[in-house]
Image (cartoon, rainbow, N blue to C red; front, side, top):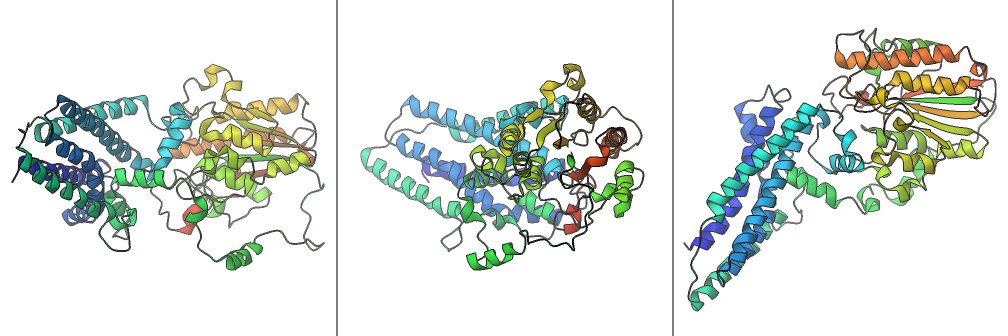
Length: 504
C-alpha cells in the first residue's frame, strides 16, 4: 500500500485511538463518581462512545488528507510547516478540551459545552474562582504536558516521514485514491447514510448518566453546543401553537376577587428580596432536611408564609435570576443573559415596581459584570447597583467570589439607617458565600459546605433581626428564595424533581 494512503488511514485511526483511551483516563480521574464501575462498564463506555469519536476523528483528518493530496504534486517545505502548525494547534486544543472537561466534570456533572466558555469570557477571574490557584496551575501544567505528548505522537507517526514524488501517471492515480478516501470521511462525520445525523445522543446507552457522560466525546459536545447558540425559536417547538397557547393561558394571571386573603397591612409595602446562593430544602429541617444548618431560614419559615412546592428553574445563578426577576424559563444549553439585546426586552418585576414609584437597588458582593449581570439588572430597572467595587479591597482580597455575605448585609443595613431610602423601595440582596470554594469567615460546622450555608444563614438572621428594629419593619415584605439548588447534597440525581425544590 502506498505510504500516503497508509498515512491518511493512520491519521484517522490515531485520532480515534486517542479519543478512546481518554475515556478510562476521564473515569479514573473522576473515580468517586465511577468507583463502582466494573471492567465491563469501562469497555461499554469506550464502545458506545465510538460513534462520536469516529465523527470527530473524521473532521480532524480532513486537513491532513488534503495536505497529503497536495504533497503528491509538490515537495515544498511549506506543506511540512503547515502540517507541523496544524498538529501543534490540534494538540493544544485537544489537550485543553480534555483536561477542562475532565477537571470540571466533578463540579458540573455534564459533558463540556459552551457554558464554561461563556463564564470564562465574561470574567476569567470569577470563572476560576471555584477552584484554588494551585488547582489552576496544575491544570495548566497538565495541559502543557499532555499537548507535548500528543504532538510528539503526531510527529513520530504523521509528520517526520517524507515521501518522494511519483511520476505523473502515479500522481494522478494516487491523488484520486486519496481524494476518494477523504470523501469517505463524510460517512463517520455524518454518522452513516441514514436519516439521523450524528448527535450527542448516539453515545447515551445507560440509565446511569455518569456512564453516558463518560462516553460523550468532549470535542463533539463543545462543537455541538457552539453550533446551537442560534435559532432558539427552532430548538424548543414541542407543541403546536394552539396547544401551547392553551397550556400557557393556565399560567398567566386571572382576574382577582375579594376571596383572596390579604396577608399584608398595606398595598404598597417596602420590599426586600434576598436571593440566596444555592440554598435548597435539604438544609432546612422545616422541609424535612438537615437540622442545625439553616437555623434562621427554619425560623422564618415558621414566622412567615412558606411555599413548599417551589422549584428552581435552572442550576446556575445567571439563569435563575432571569427566572426569578423576569419569569424567563431557563434553556438547557445557553443563558439569556448572554444576549443583552434580548434581556432588554424581557418582562421585569423590578421595572414594574420602578414604574409604580418604587426606588430600586441591588446589592451583590461580587463582580456585577460577570455573565452580563450588570446589563441585565440595569435594563430590568435597577437604579442603584452596589457590587464588589463599592467595598474596600481588603474585604474581598482573600475571597475569590467577592465580598462575603456579612459585609454585604451590613452595607445594606448601613444604607437603611442613613435614612436616604425613598419609600416605597425594592432592595434586592444577592448572596455569594455559599458557593465553591466555600471559604467563609465562620466556623460552626465541620462540613465545609454546610458551614458555608450556615454562615450565609447567620448573616441573613443578623440582618433581619436588626431590620426589625428599624422604622421600616411594619411596612415591609421580605422575600427569601434561592437562585437554584446548589452543592448539597452532592451528586443529586437531576432527573428527580424533588432535587430541584427550593424554599420560598
